[in-house]
Length: 50
Image (cartoon, rainbow, N blue to C red; front, side, top):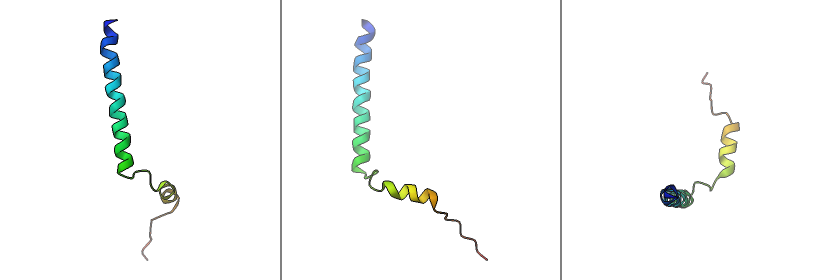
C-alpha cells in the first residue's frame, strides 16, 4: 500500500507533463501541415550541376 502512495502522484505528474507537452505542440502549430512532410519525403531535392 505504501507503494501506491508514491506511484499515484508520480503517474498524475507524468500525465500532466504529457498534457502540457501536447498543448505546447498544438500552440507551436506542429500539426498544421501534415501533407507537406509526406510530400517532402517523396520529392527529390538533389540537383545535379552540369
